[in-house]
Image (tube, rainbow, N blue to C red; front, side, top):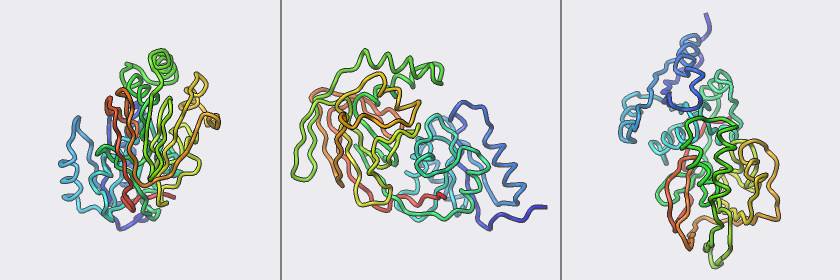
Length: 292
């Protein structure tokens, strides 16, 4: 019989709607933890589950670690429930967008990710609040947010669906007239999109923000001036760098963005809507994340 893995009580918050549904993560977790004699509890998110309900489940469980099983949106939801506390949060990547798992070097293999979630030490990282929305990974206004909206509206996922969404977005999206203030500096430009970056890369590994760190005293604002079909496809299918001629980067702890016309906005892969004003600020030591 295997030795008990740890004395910690674990709560797994599983999003059954994440990813392609090819793996039953509740079964995988149950088998793994039972085999390791690990004290655990599973909670599967219901459709339109409220933060108040998730907070109540966490409190009632008595768990010492909460593990989000899903994509970036699931992690964001769990993090909102324990924001600015010492509760450690683990992650089992199971979504269609697993940008933070890649950022934290958490493997896609479920058993390897489970081993890390149970045994690795937590560390504090910063987060951003953008228009009241918690942002752990990346938020952006403009082209990519429009692409997220188009992609979410398609009946099928995968590379072909993404390519279709990219073409639809390319032919229907126009450049933004943007203005944003950082400290005493005002930047005005035409742009394909503006990225508010806590992390360094999109889910495919393409580094939009190579200077970023999850635990430094700033977040980055990335002004992407031009886009092309190749730049679009890089976001999902490669880890090739963007053309540096098309990008400017700024560091700040707070930000105000204005656009002449309303533009699409997304946070951590979740489409928020159209707006023409974004305000963002950093929250230091916001999340106690478990990572290798």
